Length: 193
Ligand SMILES: [Zn+2]
Image (cartoon, rainbow, N blue to C red):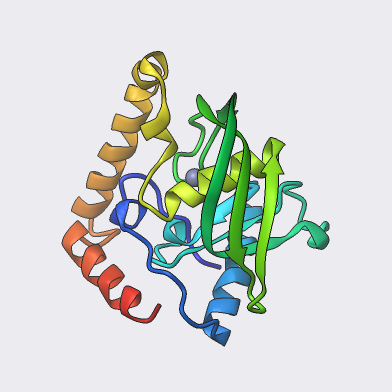
């Protein structure tokens, strides 16, 4: 299983590289991401959240590991068109227990590749549309805390500061490498995209 990194791990702000070839390693990483996501009771997970700097994310909007038919892997996703706005409560596995309202497009026309190389274009709304936009943002180093309104920003301030303190303490204790080392690792992995 791939451990999920928490804010402010530098992987979350690192711009993910497009996937140029689907290797067995990439397939395996996608499968491991599903395990990590289910373990954390999530419905979506982006590769940067497991410190892999690739344009890949997964969704199972049921959150139910038994519903394999709802498991989807998205490579090199693009948003072609946005329509309307919808506000909803969101959380993120890299910010455990922080939930805030986020305004997003109501309907999105999207394009992506699947693990078997198929190009897909489709229109998403509801939870799939919202989750797609959240995970897509991760691939560009954008987090849901960046999208909060002024009241949400104030409400989330304490929780965000606590994540930042935890990160620094873990580094002080040597439980996780320094940001410079983490960034060097990401650069190495990015070369393998
Ligand atoms: Zn997230």
